[in-house]
Length: 101
Ligand SMILES: [Zn+2]
Image 1 (cartoon, protein in one colour):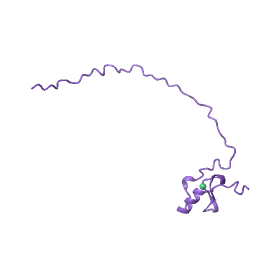
Image 2 (cartoon, rainbow, N blue to C red):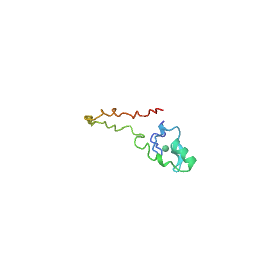
Image 3 (spheres, rainbow, N blue to C red):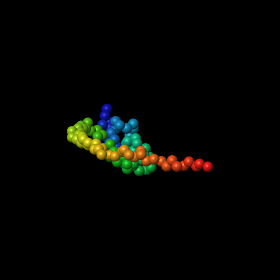
């Protein structure tokens, strides 16, 4: 029996099949999902960060999976020409620290 077939959490939009149990909320009994209901029970308010968190795909079988068609791979040529790395190791350390007593 799909008693809660079209049920959605009033806060986050989670479907009934996605939560372990339905909990009470500001909208009445069994108006929130488990997570939102627990938050409500503890804080006395609904978690704003979960607002419509699952609203897009809950109880929606037709998920519009848009394939990424235009994958433009811009070939960036590595122009590391004319980089003078030589004549750097020619810096001689001053070896005049010979204290001849
Ligand atoms: Zn919820």
